[in-house]
Image 1 (cartoon, helix red, strand yellow):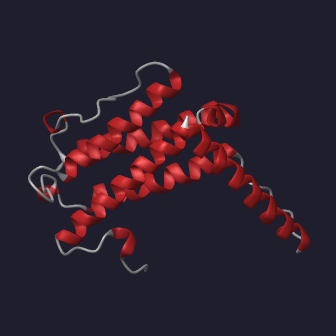
Image 2 (cartoon, one colour):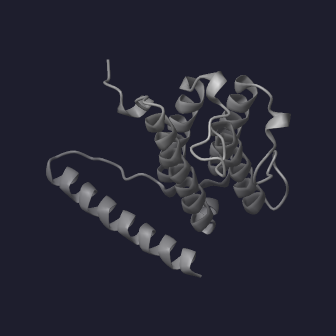
Image 3 (cartoon, helix red, strand yellow):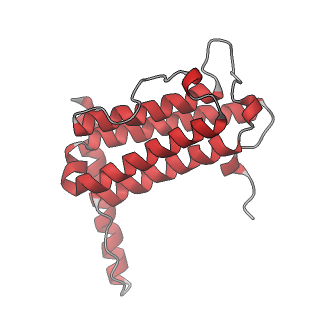
Length: 178
């Protein structure tokens, strides 16, 4: 129930901001069309997903087993957890299993960096494809899921930034742009 209230509040804020933005653009003589709910979800989903993929590709394979503390997930385990959770989202949206939706898929089944990166990429691409397929009505019907799981990816992005910093490495997003 709390997620629904939060989702509706966020949607209302987006509508108000979109209306204000559109009114300002129209007064300047521009016709700027506000984003649809699906476009907004996809923009955020793909943004954080892209940042995670960049990290997954950037991080050295010999450090995929690195943990901040012994009781935490390794870098690779965090990536597998994110991808598994993305498939859990899809299962909740479509009502049947899509991909490897285990909360923590075992490293033994994703033995290389390439396999882990491919799994993460596919989970993000499959999520984006489902949002497009669902369209605005479907996205709005499950907006609480889309917001929650996108936020989940964002939380783990922040965690992976700590892995970088603990190793004296600047995360890709914080590096100077060329």
